[in-house]
Length: 48
Image: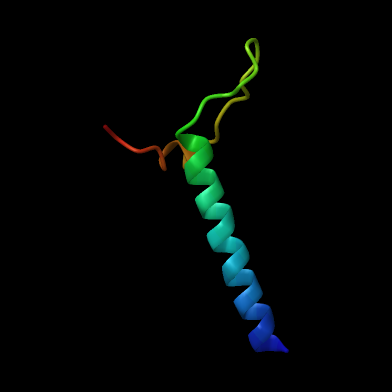
């Protein structure tokens, strides 16, 4: 059971990291409000 737990947690962490990278490189669709981005997520932005 512990091994299954570890696999699920690793998959969840990978999914969260992928989602954060995608959000760091996109803008909010709302015209008047975009919440402040945490510093750690800002570091994930793709540099061009």
